[in-house]
Image (cartoon, rainbow, N blue to C red; front, side, top):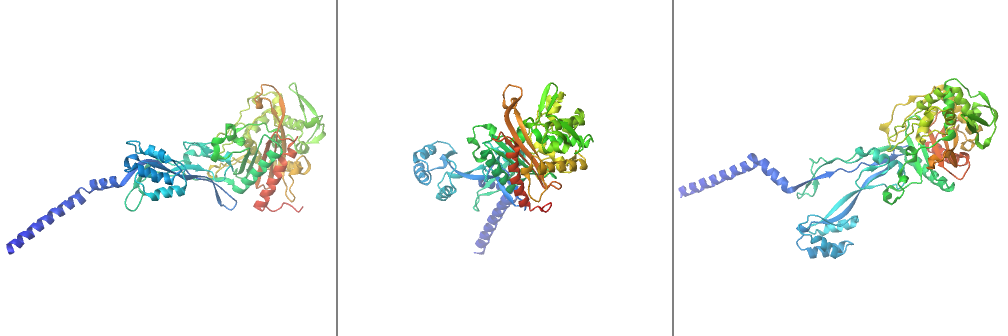
Length: 551
């Protein structure tokens, strides 16, 4: 009996040794192979792309407002090879979706297929019903759709993404490589704990972009501009608001606009262009302070220098006249800006000298891009002006016959507002560049005082805001036939009316440029200036800027 017990124990012991040995072999010696085998059964790896980064504006308190984000839209697909009872599955799925049962059955009948799309853009509620039904071989997927929750707000700044998810125009295009998610391997884990992404995923989401735009100023600028373009029956218009000390763009609006959520419905592709950076124009009289700045900087004139205006000039066989053919007689350089006298601007340019004039234009950045972080920025080398004809210098002195973008002239104006230091416009905090000295602080202060006189005593009176010194200049430029695509020399009767101003004049918190293309008024005094006034008053109240003086 004892012998039998010992034999049984020996057998049990031997079996235990074999089992332990086998376990040791599986768990220690060959554990890597079986771990990989198990993961292969539980995990599904695929090539995927990270989510596109969001775009934000903010307000003066730092609150963020989403301008562009990614929305997940559910869709339903089936894997026919996995479906056991296709008829029953088609009936059940058809009752949950707005898709005919026959169409579903047709998709399910595709032999050997692993993927057949049933319905896109379904509601979250429908997706939940399908998921809860747990129909074998029926799946809920998600499409990542770019979404602009503010509709048309800042549309020309933002741009949009095309059907391939690539940025087109504006911020979406300029920062596309930062915004777009990075491709990598995504691993879906199907263990009992649910479907989770493995920590080893190499998929990366895109970076967010925070703009310098102030949400409230942007909204106000767009509302005022839209109303003005409609009321004045204008072709289009633009507004730029910038901090002249930093170059940060606080608002950039253009009308007519578009909804980037519905970009496919826009038939005229020109609508997508941002006129502030993608269209050239002749600025007209808002250019005169730049001419005057150069002449004052070089000591060729002072605000009190006089000349006699006879209402007409002959240069290079061409005739130059003042607006409305007016004759102002003896006037100072201060009055040249106050009453926007063309012949006075020519006088200042000729005192400065043609070469010095060209040097200052280059210094102001008129022959180069501003470098703003927006896609599609254009500029002109102004070849005709650079040929050196006398008439070209004369007309350029008052802003005709010289092409630039609205942002280029606003950048140049920043040198006057910012004590002689010209800033580079920027849409993001990280893109800003160091200011460059263009004028002496004394010259900038002198020209600012002349621009205050324009508002106090000249054609800019409608820009006045009680208790504040406002510096500004009007411009009413004729549009050339060539700019209209007409093969004809000279200028049409169409005008671009504008106003550039900043406040408080001697310590400015903001600059505004308003440009209205061919309004039903004769001058900027009745088109661009009222828009400037209302927006400037809004910003002063919004920032709670204390008055300069007692009214």
